[in-house]
Image 1 (cartoon, rainbow, N blue to C red):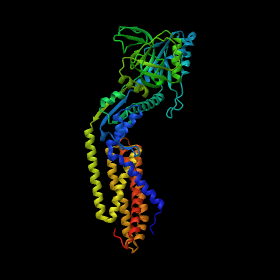
Image 2: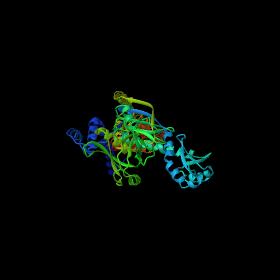
Image 3: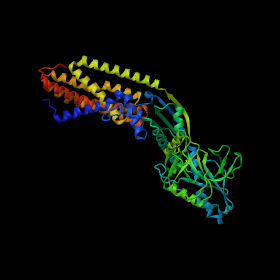
Image 4: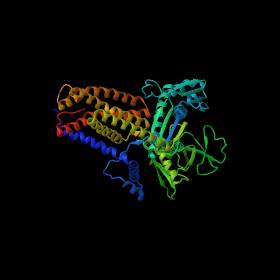
Length: 553
């Protein structure tokens, strides 16, 4: 006989109620979205009557999670950028010069004087005056090589050292270049994500494509130019020794020194040593603030390593100027009055409040390790997103209505029960997506439409099986019970294979393919739940109340 324990009934209806409750905010999308934005702004320290009114526009006791709309539905910006990995090689090699120089200084008795020679960006050439000591110099520099920490470069060193006449040539090994490429791409993805997250956009798509490219899609942002301005700035901050000051940008700065313009003083240029004392990579925090005279500034704090190096430098160079360099411009060049060993300081300049805030965001997110070249950029207007939403809504309604009509015409009252379960299924899908904070795209809508068509498959199997059992002159209750039992294996087999396909699509796909896989996978889970449990519970409840002698399926 048909029997469902009370605790199972409570669990089934409880899950259905929870799904409907989680999906409900999507019926009031703009209202809930304004509420969420206002709450986030208030938590960030902003406060106004408008924000408070918007925050009160949705009851706080109700769920406020929404299904995020993807780029093709909401509009936004799309960029495809190429990471200039060669810049990273040059920076790595340039950063090795102080270590090589210090190592060779201890061998002056054997190799004489040393001098860095002009070379390609990705190699370091050091000439020695006594060529007979070149082997000793080679051995010393070889001692600087470090093993590569990566799976692909295990057992190999990070640098290769060669001898060319009276010169030592240092280059990165191929294994180290590969490991550097991977690290650079990962760092670039993380920094771009942090910068985008800082401005509060929802569910951006930021992923690697190929060996040196990054795909960035940000829904809700105004234009591709706005997105480029946000992520394309390297915000490279360094603290460099000052060699001199000049008004002539064409003056010879001397060996390896560079001339950089002043950000504040028009027509003033500084000659600096390009090897930094510390860099933005040592920053742990940066915040907009106001200086002693009320002008906007940016305060910063170094990590332990950076604070130690900066402190050691200021102790040894009291009375000398040092340059704060931001993106190849000298923000300021103060004179070191006292040793600075606190690990914190501030950047001042002719900043507006907005400029100081944006600079703090960029510094806090970190410097991009390499320049980005934008190969493709598109701005998708909100009107195109509205058209996509309307097309997706129309497709869903047509599919939904067609399935409802088909089920009623084919199975009568049992078809109505299947339709109730189908409506519940759609509510559960949106409740699940809302709880996950998932992003809905056009392919995702296609996954939902496909799920609507597939959702009734299980009910069709069950109802057809019940029909077969009724032909054997069994009673209605027994026929329904056997119909569910014997159709169960076919339902599980069919949905498991489809779910495996969805998992593979999610693991191997990207962007729109993943969106389709997510909605398809969730739809499979909810459709199995509604077909096996919800429809059975409704039928059992109806049977208990009506106790029909015969049924028509």
